[in-house]
Image (cartoon, rainbow, N blue to C red):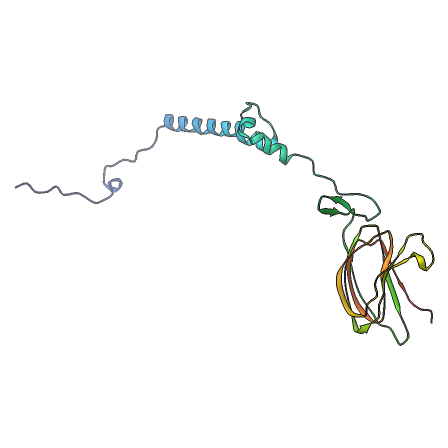
Length: 202
């Protein structure tokens, strides 16, 4: 009866007399050349066309890589310029030649005093506003056209009694737009060019 062969589970590399198989210099040289050739092919067909718009073989255009470069390298659209903070409409987006300005302040008025506070806005400029009074107030949200004189130049937007109001406003014409109230807290974000508070002479 034959006995089964005994297998040594020891790693063959750990057995005495077993040598490691080291690639020859020729094999390493061939592998290096192949890797270099592959890198050059990728550089010429993908990297240069996609990143720099250089397509020496014409393959980048056929594979669509050159279009990626043309999109990435296109000149950015410059923002609107000008001293008048009027919106430039682009579809559903209104762009301004300057940043939004944030204005927050508190006014305290004594008995029989009033405050009229206005912003100068270009036509179609937008203002976000939020104000709150310490009690119910009779206020007048109105505007005056540039260069106009007399009471006929004033357009009233809202004269209802309120204690607070939050919303947005788009100037129907270039001019000063604002409120007339008693003591309040104010917060405005808009593209105003200047502001002015009107108080009674004491």
